[in-house]
Amino acid sequence: MKLTTIIILLSAIVLHSCNKSNQVSGTYVAQSVMRPMYNGCCTATEVLHLNNDHTFNVYHQNDQGDYLTKDVTSGNYDLKQDMISFKPDSLNQHYDYSNIKYKVPASDDHVNSLIKQGSESQKFYKIDFKQADSLYIHRYSHTNWDQESITIKKDGTVHYIRHSQDKNRNPVDISKHKKLTQEQFQQYIETLSQSRLFQAATTSEKYSVTFSLAIKEYDIVIQDQNNIDEKLYNFFFETVLSWVK
Image (cartoon, rainbow, N blue to C red):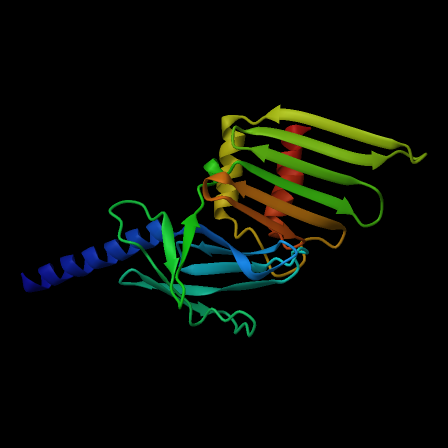
């Protein structure tokens, strides 16, 4: 009887732990004004992606106006007593995440934010990509004048623009609008939700790539140049592009 009780208790603990991990999984973001300000610049942006399998990815950017000062870290995380700690795959001397901790606020239902611990605690908001007001991605060819951009609004509308030249170097412009189907919009949301958004390696050798995600609810705009996750980049310029065309 005692053995059965112990097994039931252990099962309940494991189930609670799994449920908590599922609740905290997702993408979190914090953005703050850097001090001292220089010519009105700049912001510090941090994006934390937690997966159900206890792996994580972190993107940190000190934007000095060029979006080039950034660090990307990944590894495993542990959740104990509403506190998240990290074990990076490798030590990042510029941005060491091995001593970072996040507290999960008391919640009866869904986890909507995390509190980064430190001398000055910082609130990270969980992104509901359905509520992101707009996503913009643009690529500019290194070998010719071709450039393309895709903008997706939260109502499911897509605006595609292409600027290029014909063989006589005359400008050729294409502009298309389309409303995504429910299935397409759902695939877009799921792809964003499951993506780490950014990677350490350069996205493309052929293009300069710009990314911008606006979330008015938190007064946040996440911007990056040339470090968008390659799978996410391919999704936009292959899958989404096929929907628009």
